[in-house]
Image: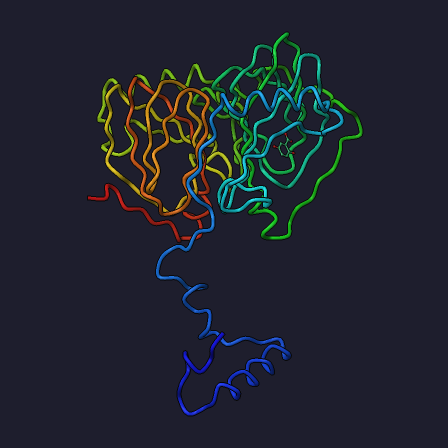
Length: 352
Ligand code: GTQ
């Protein structure tokens, strides 16, 4: 750095340099050199808008399936790495995403970690996830959660590959240096409750009597697509349709009415055929997965042409607008709950 150019007052360049070297040796640094970067006038983002075509990634995931078993890999996943943060295992600044493959007959052993995870099912006939003693069968479009420190394993008792999108808060947990992981004593955890138990207890607009347990994450760990899709369709029919989002709903924790997990919010939205949305931006880092339909999203200067199963990332404060060629359904997840809790959430909607 040329100190004389920035700080011409009284002192010589040599004096500045000597001073900065002494500061550095003492483990200090001058704030005035970095203030604009660490307290920016608006977000300075390393992550960029990014797009993954399912048609392009799927063959490589299948290739991984021929090269490594689920057992060998622990989890056979291709990480979706943001081009602005290669090697950092993140799709946005705060979240991780990947595509996981479980082949027929395979099992991904039981483990737990402090990171919270969600699965959005892309292909499955007979895939399942078990969470804390209860199994749930995976159908395309199902949204399944494995909250922090819950035991989970995955398997495929069908005849075709099972593939889903993983979303985890790994960058957030590691930011706090709070990452822990352990294996279960058994490869497959014992099943202690019948399928559908959590849905009956928490997913039927009732709660068990006196259920006042404070839980940071939802006790309802599976949100079947058939139900969410029907709700969206009905809400859409009676309107109104938001000028930016179409019809967008957020998944909730039925015990609190809040987000499904403290670090990751999840959403489902429907865009009517021909929808031409207005631009919108917010500070959330969001990941989208196309469930149905075709269309395009403008994100900053980029245009992503999407169809079923494609994934794209929208980092903080990039303007986004969606256009739907056919009726479309988009699933998304983001760090919105954390930002809202911290009181730093901002949005501009619509940007006119
Ligand atoms: O399925 O438990 O994509 O532990 C990354 C870490 C999936 C999982 C990932 C994991 C998992």
